[in-house]
Length: 598
Image (cartoon, rainbow, N blue to C red):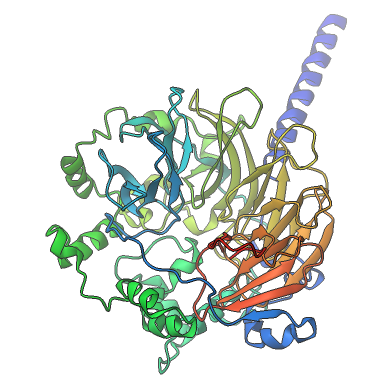
């Protein structure tokens, strides 16, 4: 009886140890508390969350005591050098690289639907072998890395549907992989408190900047659309521009007509010369130049083709037409069964209790040797959700089961992808929420990688729509002192020495108009409320030439602020009279000896 009892005890201890290890693994897999209701957070206790972006109308009064320098005109004439029509509208920022190692710059353009293009930097001409096809959409910029290790730079894109595709400089496809989905318990939200917030009249909402955006984009005389009607319109996307509700919120507003109407006035307001103003009339549609005169393929029907492609970017027939045109044998090595098998699997248990949530990528990945093995990796922020457009198809919807509400599954995480083995090295699940709450787990912020503590190992800094700013080590583990919570973080977090003390600081912006600087340990150094949506990362440089570093931020109200890097004080502001949709670029545009940047 003794040996049998001893064996039983050993078995029991082994079971306990295994259980503890499994539970520990589950606990480490998600960094923040799951959010099935908004009262997870004490909003009143967080100063960042008590503010809104609607305060932009009083922004001038807010900074009267600081007496910032306000610029009223552009000191340098800018003229349009060239413009080229590409295959589809461009949502993400192009990149510039010398792809052919010929000392000439090339512009890599991520068209929103299906295409990746390369233009010659000198004149905008299309490079040989381009464009190339992909089967999804691009919400982010391409990145450059040597995928085949031949010493020649290649172009990597990570599509909305989480495909990693690499092309050589000639347009040949070198790599095609798919990031895995995330397995969650089907009933993870059961037992958590329901959402107590009145979403029709929320007191505090992570979409607080949307009302401001509507005001900015309304043209004079335009009638305000009632909230109820806006909700109906939101449920019925127009012009094929539908998609999951969490796609970049700036895309939910029709900016084209509002900005075009304001374009001539903005030019005059910013006092460009007559020649420079005339060169920009191409963009406002007032010039006689017509792309159709150069290429009969581009005509009015083209817009309809684009809308159809956007309506269903996975449509096989439309995609086959693209393949016939460009001869790219995209599906040669596609294996759906293989990619379904490489998801992040649940621990031992009943498979029917879990559901695999689809991966989507809404921001630009980062190329870095994350583990010091001498080879570059991709660090990717991934949003896990069931796309409402995709699952509007009854066949796809049936795959999930009729008891599954796809609105209950929204998660965000970061992973490291090995460019040699084409496998995921590690994955960290950060946030989990439903689509029915204000604090939603989207990942719009690209990862920033830097050695924060000077130990020779890189750290990863990333913001989430829940409002957390995370710092992870090279293995994906959260660092001490982090995360900190602000409002919704759409902008990439910046890591720079902003206060000139020789150490790196972390600067984050949120949708409520907050800008804050933190030490590497997570200690707040300063913060500033600009009262307007900040959707793009700040830029760092010595703008006014005083030898000190400034943090430059563009806002949804159209104002550019230069903040003192040591205190956050506003030292300069400039009103563009138009909503700022991208990061501010700092550069020296003239040959003068005068210090400072444009």
